Image (cartoon, rainbow, N blue to C red):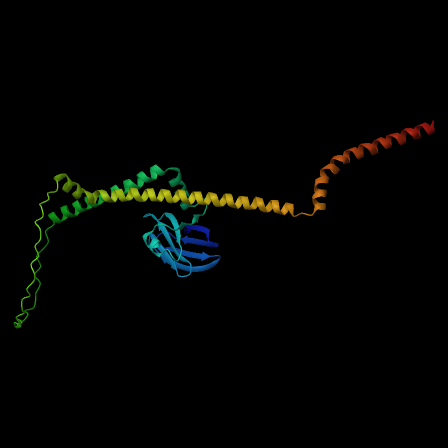
Amino acid sequence: MSKKVQIWSRTISGATHHLEVTGEIIRTFVWTVDGEEVLTRKTSDDRARLESKAHGSLLVIHSGLGTPRRATYFAPGEDLAGMAGIGGVDLTPEPGSRAAAYEQRVIDHPRRYALIETLGGAAGVVGGIVAAMVVAWILARVSLPNIDLPLPNLPDLPDLPLPDLPSIPWPSIPWPDLPDVHVPGWVEQAAGYLKYIWPIVLAFVLAQGEIKRRRKHAQASAASAEKSAALAEKSAALAEASLPSAERAASDASPDGTDASPDLTDASADRGDASAERGQRRGL
């Protein structure tokens, strides 16, 4: 069975970064810059970090099921941003790959992506509660045996005489009488539910951030493609303008010469007919 390969690449600040990831559970990461290998690493971490003192770092994210998500480059001066997982520049996944398909789905259906991520956070909260209830139910119905461990008899330690330390006359500070503040019951109840709500809110916020990141990357890629097309068109125009005048004149005159060839052929045919007619008259 062949191992699946995911490739990302992008030119950043004049340097072309190329990342190739092979494998599903234990993945092999090969990072090259301008064709030169920077590092190779094997790990099963879903948030793998590749660090290089000279070239910065890469954060490669996979889903819990091993599906590639994105690869983000951080410059050497973006250490804190790289640790937090924010900022950076996303590399472009290979067209037709799983990471490219995932990025396109996020851009085409942002609401569905946000809903799925939010429901995933809610499922994690509910799953944790259910798991805790199951463990408590099992422990309540399992009687653990009493095990008497033979402990050694330790000798009594002698009492050590401690010196009498002088008391320090601390000054008395007159603190004002603070009023008794009673928190409403609904606030206490909401605070108790907060530990279950904040993972869902966090999942929604992270989903919105991921959507903005994907849109920004798509806009940057489109702008780069338009710039490359404009440069190619400009290069073609400059190349055409740099042709010698004689070559341009010959190129412009070639259609006229082609159009004139049928007229010359017709004229030669007319001359042939006229010579044949004169020959017949002389024969008569």
